Amino acid sequence: QVQLVESGGGLVQAGGSLRLSCAASGRTLSSYAMGWFRQAPGKEREFAAASSRGGTITSYVESVKGRFTISRDNAKNTVYLQMNSLKPEDTAVYYCAAGLKTAASRWANEYDYWGQGTQVTVSS
Image 1 (cartoon, rainbow, N blue to C red):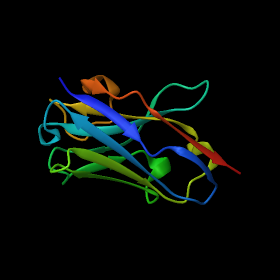
Image 2: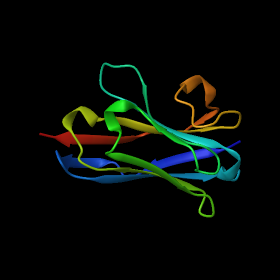
Image 3: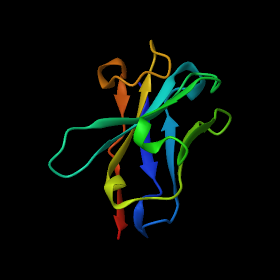
Image 4: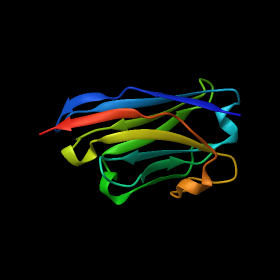
């Protein structure tokens, strides 16, 4: 079992930055691919970014490429999502997820464990 806890969300103006953290306990994160997903009000959860176990492979949804960066510190058992040049359409609850049998997948059903989410609100 892996327990994931996200932090770092908040209210920011358009153009600003936030760094989300996802701290894991129970198992070492180096065994898992990690993903960030987000869900805006009234919309389905969507993929944002993912990292392979070693962090050498990353993937992003087109709308965040060049603005978001996923990274991981396996020694600290933590995954990060650096979000720059934020836009109002980035407003959502952001969830991190851990997958044992996947590699930087953008498919939510390939992840085994999920955090509770952290709210990101970008004002215009």
